[in-house]
Length: 278
Length: 247
Ligand SMILES: Nc1ncnc2c1ncn2[C@@H]1O[C@H](COP(=O)(O)OP(=O)(O)OP(=O)(O)O)[C@@H](O)[C@H]1O
Ligand SMILES: [Mg+2]
Image 1 (tube, rainbow over the protein chains, first blue to last red):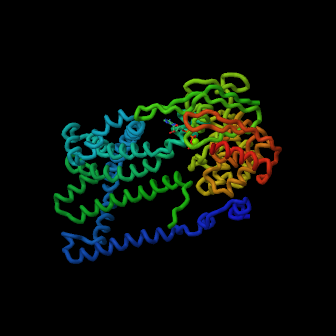
Image 2: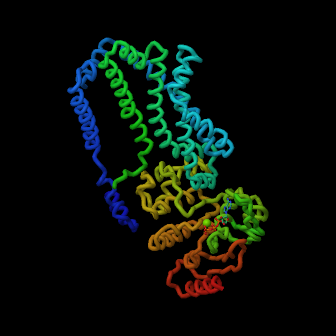
Image 3: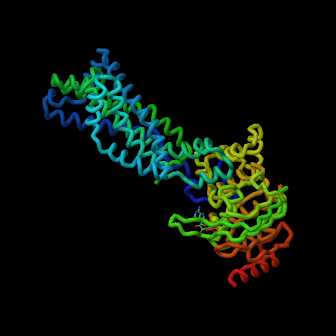
């Protein structure tokens, strides 16, 4: 006996939408084939445009791919990617940790909200380039400079996300928890954090994009390794193919992180949500 | 064993604008052990507030609440069913019920037995592993009822639990609730503004005034169970209630 028949026998009235649950959801391989198609279209457009220019000015994707292969074989590639990724992760992790607390505090206290609001707005406005330069001037050519720059650039954005998320928390569920005499820690763990998770994922996504942009600036202007440093090196010898190779390679790394790590984790935590079909 | 005596209950809320809103004015309600009591009153009169006070969500300004004649009413246990199911959508049906058990401090080794006992009591044994959003509204509310029953409370507080459901589902849920309740009688305080529902369910009905709220009439429903919704005696009591409500 499948579930549909159980539902019918239990005397429940069901909308036709419920009975059809699971039938209209898109098959995973279809979504993948569309993704791959979009990449192929992008590469084709790039290739087409590049055919109008000399390869020194705009190399096609094939030349860039070859250059990426060379970089990997030369061996430096992973060293520089490692440095950049490590800076992004440390800076972002610190920012995430701090901002979750700040955001929850702003969402639960009017005084803190008014007090911190200004800082968040100012923080969102200051250009990442300014922070990268300020950090290098203040901390010198150290690992602290890029980590600090990432921290201050991403924190306001994450804080805003957590702040909004906290305000949107379902108060009726908290009341339910209290009616069942749940302890404070249980309320946070079982009721508050699960409702903040979608906001944490959104913040992670945008946060990484921001962090990558600012770390590259730090590496260009001061540090002596990392993807930004190598892009700058390529620029100084006017090698467009190398600038593109480093840029594309790092984008691929970020893509792998998105699809290999972030999406599966997110999927795990949102498995309770029925698929949306229109 | 739990009888309830509520005496001289007062509650005033202070709104954001600073104005005082007197909600409960000398409210007095009694329920015998294992009695099914309905509170019937207009919207906004303070029915939910009264249940909130019992469950410890709101402090009364003054008044007395005695459970079995003793004043430490917070020592009793209360199962709460709200108007909306208020399930944790990210937890399975089983884990939602366990959340209630865990929160109420029921020892872990009893959890599995309680979950299966009360889930099958509300007819959802086959849905233990499902997530709430895949269930219909009526089924979600049954999970909420199982969650409240599973802590095996002294007192069951129900705040318009069927008002969010369509009338046919609500009807069958009322019959099921009485079936479950007759197997293991708890003292029930059931809030509603549906007079017919109150007459069908209750042993005793308190009719409440608009704010500031007190009891203006108490009606005993002395009709044996199981009851038939078409029963002449129920109909007569219903007519009397409506008459006294419209004045
Ligand atoms: N925390 C609060 N602060 C201020 N006012 C409140 C608060 N809780 C309830 N009230 C007010 O007290 C009154 C009674 O509310 P309550 O929810 O108890 O009514 P009710 O009888 O349950 O109404 P309904 O039938 O609509 O559910 C309402 O006017 C409500 O606005
Ligand atoms: Mg209410």
